[in-house]
Length: 357
Image 1 (cartoon, rainbow, N blue to C red):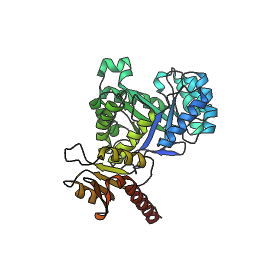
Image 2: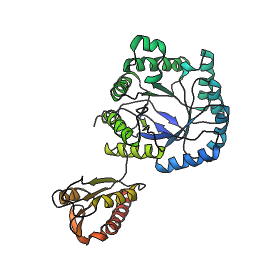
Image 3: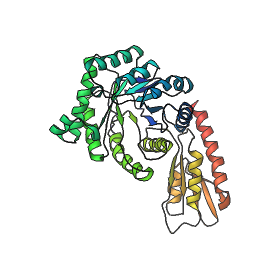
Image 4: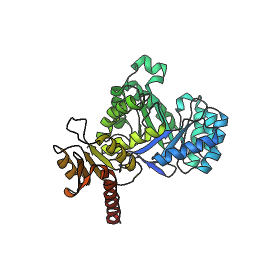
């Protein structure tokens, strides 16, 4: 893996973005922000799932004013997503939002930009500039087309407006529904800017297709050390966005969570591996531990893979073997595999916690 790109540090509430190896996971609420109780419930659900920051759409003054109470009743930092109306930005800043997502070139005069910047400075609130290939400025499209170069030029324009006012608490995103365009834009951004980069493939698709598309594109960037915060954009429950983000980061060693190694479909299977691995994955979902569990199907690859994991099972006809750190612990009946495996998983996790302390 390449060395992570060096950036400035930006604080969003109590969360640091940039200037470290941590990739901060975030997602967005689906409920209209003025519906305070529903929004708070969704924020808490997303935080429990693992989202470190949650973004809210601010469509009008009712949404902007709701931020005050919402902020008082949740613990994760919140981002206000605003388009065009600088007054909404001023209202959420007044109500102690943690970050504003707004493109300064879209809110009107220099004076309006100056007002927003001054208020953000007063409260140490950062601004994310969000460039989307589907909404580039007409003059940019005329000169560069809908290209990665055009996205970078748009970002330079908006960044320049903030820097002109002496504002540098900036995060940048450059999203497209095209994998190649997104990758090219972020690579160029890493060379052009020293600000933290928010990764995402916009409008990536459904839970299935969007997961593949986002993983393919963002995986390239993560491997190259690019990116400081991430949202997986899916047309589904945002909890799934968080789950995919955790799994993707874990694959690159950028997020600590249990890892599962398991067999693909094969005619050699002699027990219900698929049911077992699904149950194990569900059990490990919210466990904060760096442990690798192998759930293998037969004697061909099973013992070798299981030996490489912290703990593993290799199933067979009516029975299976449990391995711990490469050693066979015992043979158990097929119907007892799940319960016996969980006992050992819990024991190993406790040992790891003790060793860590």
